Structures are given as structure tokens and as C-alpha cells.
Length: 84
Image (cartoon, rainbow, N blue to C red; front, side, top):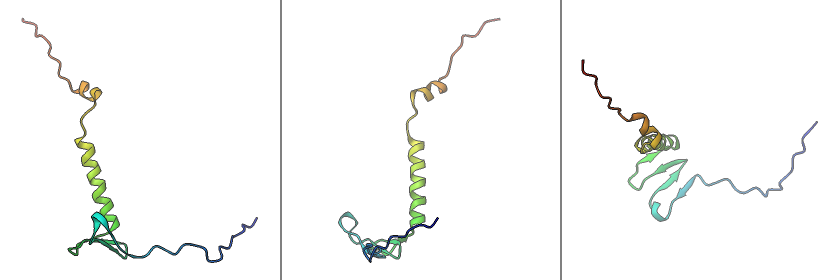
């Protein structure tokens, strides 16, 4: 069985540009060859940015308040002592 390949006659959209200047709140930032660059010249790769966001999500999860069921497991119980 062979697959039929549709010809697009050149109607495919052009590839995204590798150089993008950002606007709005990101004015001055740009993407060059897939690397995000700040107006000061600092740069960060997509992999590094993903790692930073992953660590931040772990910190948010750790700071999240405990649910009531988790708190009930941590409750201390005071028992009266028997006198000899």
C-alpha cells in the first residue's frame, strides 16, 4: 500500500524568522537564532529557561498551604498519663 502525497504548490507558510524583535512589555528584548537576549546583552537558551521555570514551579508547589486532610495527619494528640 502506498501513500499519496499531496502537493501544496508552494502554498506552505514561510518558516518563522530566526530573528525577532519583541514589543510591548518586552520592548528591547529580541530572539536571535533561538536565544532570548535582553537589552543589556544577557542571553538565555530555551533549555535554561525551561529549567528555571521548572524549579520555580517546584518552589510554588512546596509553598502551597497544606490541605485539611494533610493537616489532620500532622495533628498532635495529648493523652492523659496514668499515675502509678
